[in-house]
Image (cartoon, rainbow, N blue to C red; front, side, top):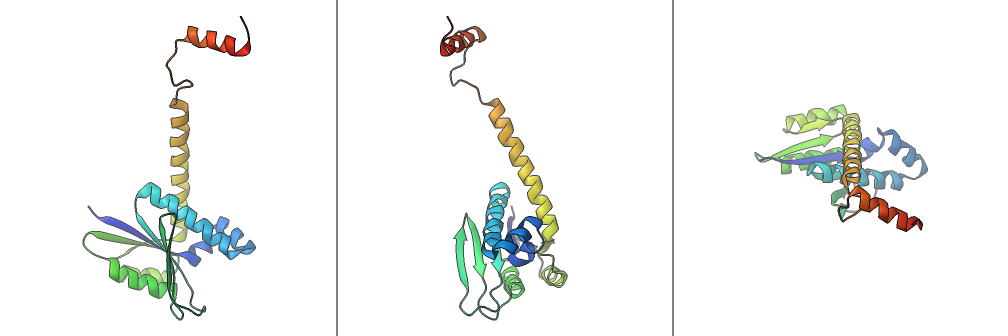
Amino acid sequence: MKKDILLVDGYNVIGAWEELVQLKEELLANARDRLIERMAEYKAYTGWHVIIIFDAYLTAGIEKKKWRHDVEVIFTRENETADERIEKLVTELSGRRVQVHVATSDMTEQWVIFAHGALRKSARELEIEMDAIDKLISGKVKDFQEQRPFSKIPLTDEIAEKFEKWRRGIK
């Protein structure tokens, strides 16, 4: 069985999803946090390993890796673009038992990752997939709530009616 890994070009996706663009206008950190939350939902639903790569190209410092909501988050090191880091990860992670997917709408990056054996998802495709996942999860939650019995003890209609009368103070 193949293991699926999703690499997400963080700022590319933030710039493509309407919800994230609006958050970015308020505060970029809010957009990053929301993307991480959404990708945690994606991971929980699909079981895929998710790595989000954020560009720190013009920021002095070393590469930073952290885990948030069971999603790996990487800020590239100084003078390294997210595209460069994604290309390295595709090469490092690819194998017979691993299928790497890259979420980016950068056409040049898509051609490069194709050459390294990865599959691509545009930012828009990922957003559509997330919307479908949200609907499926909402449907499952609704079904679960509807199937859950009102009482933990199965009651006949007659007894349930008596209890309801007692609860309301009716004799």
